[in-house]
Image 1 (cartoon, rainbow, N blue to C red):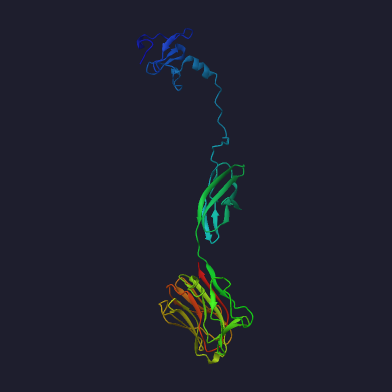
Image 2: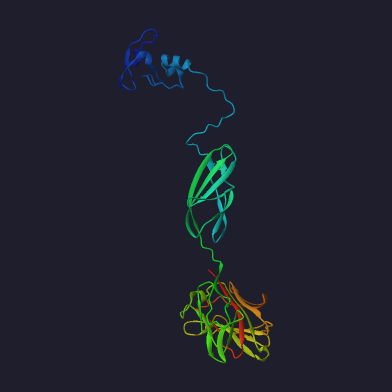
Length: 358
């Protein structure tokens, strides 16, 4: 490293005399007045301002002219384009079909309280508030939240959210049997299934609409998908099957099959029989449940509503919305076809309604 003079022969610095020296640190020519001797005895123009003895005199004079530091006082918030005003936190609750609820009350503003949050779903305004319900279909969505505090500061946060499918009980079959007397066609209002077998075969075998009900005797009315099995008549989870019916000459009825669910082989997947003594029997040849007899107080001399409903693994029988009995079964009801069973007695069916968890 170059030196201006040997360390032991350096002359004392004289303020009114200047000369050229070699900076011991950088090796370039400097005026002596621009350099100072550092703590190691080297000449340097790069003095440490923390040690005044290392600062060249000219720099010292400049420092003397600097204004006093700003006095310590209450801090003043100075907005900056790069300043992060907010921390955005949210939780999701109450997820149902068609909407999810968001709670952003734990979000933080560093300058002032949060006054509003404006939410958008897929670029379309949805709601305003710290706790909101955002409407959306199942699937992936782009969510945007614009936070504003009481001082007018704003920040935008964007994220993706996948709204899950939440199964709900859905109507899959609905026959009200409304039509002109003698009609031999009827329609499922859900559009999922078709009904066949209506018509007059003979004076003792028929099925047609009468007084806005299905009137039948010695005749099967079949409900499926135009002759094929209907997936809406297969029940893997919860379901409800409700029929409103009555019989002429009920006093002479010993026992009749009201309806049966069948598979493609025509097997009895689930069958419901009614008896004059008030019993209801449930049976299956495919292992859905064991033969189950329930004292239900059935009396179909006048119309009654008979509903079979499964929730979880509990299959319940209701008559006129009154629980009559239960049986445990979690086996999938792999049917696909529904039949109003033939009867030697005239039967009136006001409606057939089926719901399932989808």
